[in-house]
Image (cartoon, rainbow over all chains, first blue to last red; front, side, top):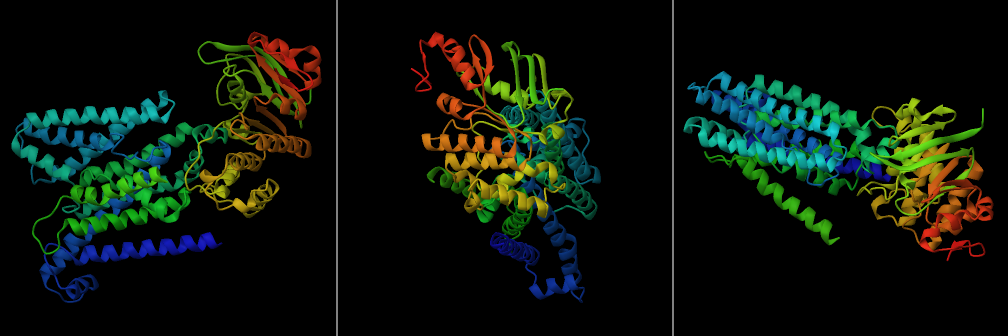
Length: 340
Length: 252
C-alpha cells in the first residue's frame, strides 16, 4: 500500500511537470505575447487576430506534436531496451530512423533528380512524411524478417546497427549527388521540428501514435516476463515471435511516425525510460510505460520551449536541444551504474 | 497406463549433430531426481528438451502420458515450470513482481493479478521465508535468496513438474543444503515431481529418490542405493581416474 501511495505521489509530480511545461510551451514563443492574451485566445475572449492565429494555428499544434513525439519516442525506447536487454537500445540504434531518413532522402532527391521542384507544395509535406514512414516500416520489416532467423537479440541489435550504417552511407551518397535545393529540404528534415505540422497531419500522427501506444499497453504483460530472460519467458508459455513482432510494430507506429513527420530526434528514447526507472525505482512496465509517456511528453515540451528561444526570431534545431538535455543524463546514468 | 509423470524413450539430444543418445528414463509423481554428469555432458540440454524449449534429435518425451510435441506452450506451462541456470537479473524489479510473473497464465491481458492469486503468492513467499524481502530489488538479493525467489516463482506457476538447471551452482555449502532440502520438502509435501541438475554428488545421494547419470559411457538411471551397488559412479567417471568412496559419498 505504501508503495502504491509513493507511486501515486510520483505520478502526481511528473504530471504537474507535464502540465507546467505544456503551459510554458504555449505561453512562450518567438513572438512575445502577453500571457493574458494567450489565455484569452484559448478561452475564446476577444484578442487580436494575430494572437488567435499564433496560438491556435502555431503554438497549440506545435505543443501537441511535441507531446506526441515525447510519448512515442520514450515508450518505444523503453520497449526496445527491455526486448534487447540493452540500456542503450532505442529505435535509432536499430536503424529505424536511418530507414526513415533514407526514405525521405530518396523522395526528396528523387524528385530533384527528375527535375521536379516540389518545395512548398502539399506533396512535399505529405510525401516526406509518407516516404519517411515507409522507410521506417521497411527497416522494421527487414529486422522482423531477420529476427525470425536470428534467435538471440544481441545479433538483431548488431544487424540493426549495421543496417543503419549502410543506410547512412547511402544517404551520404544521395546527398553528394543531389542539388542544393533538395539538399536543403533534406537537411531541414534531419534537424527535427515540431512546427509546420498542420491539423490534417496532426490527426494522422495522433492516430498512428495512439495505435502504437495501445499496442504498447497490450505488450506490458509480456515485457514484464522478458525482464528475467527469454528462456524463462518461453518456459512461461510466452510466444516470443509474436511478442517481438508486437514490440517492433509498436515501435514503427510510434517512433517511425514521429521521425517521418518531425525528423529524427535523438536521445529522448534512451534518456526518458532511464529517468523513469530512476524516479520510480521499479522495472514493472505497468508503472514504466505510463511514467515514460508522461515524462517523455513533459521533457519534449520543455525541449521545444528551449528550442524556440523565447522572444528571438531564431530557432535552434530540436535535435541540438535534445542532445544537450539527453546526453548528460545518459552519461550520469552510465557513470552512476559503473560507480555503484 | 503407468503412473509416470515423465517418460523419456530412446531420446537423442543435440542441435545439428547428436550430443547424447539412448536416454530412457522415467519420473513418477512426487519424485525428487537429480541429473549428474560432467560439464558439457548435456544435462542442461536434457532439461531444456523436457521443458520443450529445444527440440530433440529423436525419441519421445511423454508428459502425463501425452507426447510433449502435442502440448501448446501455454498448456505445457500449466503443468511444467522451468528455472533456468544463472537467470538474468533485472534491476529495480521487486522480489514480489518477480515471483508474481509465475502467474502469467492466470492473469488478465494487462497482467492484473486477481486477489485469490495474491493470497497464493504471499503464502508461497511466506513458506520460503522471503516475505520480508517483498519490496527488495531482486537484483540485489544474495544468490541464496535469489534462488529461493526463483523457486517461489515456479511454485506460483503451480505446475506438477519443476525442472531446475543447476539451482545450487553459485551457492555456498550452507545454501546448497538449504535449497536441496527445500526441493526435497516440496516434492514430499506437495507431491511435485522435481528434476534438477547438480554437481553436488553427496547431497544428491542423500536427498534424491532417483539419480540420472549422464556420463561419457552412457545414461544410467536408478535410486542412489542401486547406483552405488552397481558401481555406476565409478563406471561413469572412470576416465578421470577418480573413484567413488561410498563412505564419503563422493569421488576421491
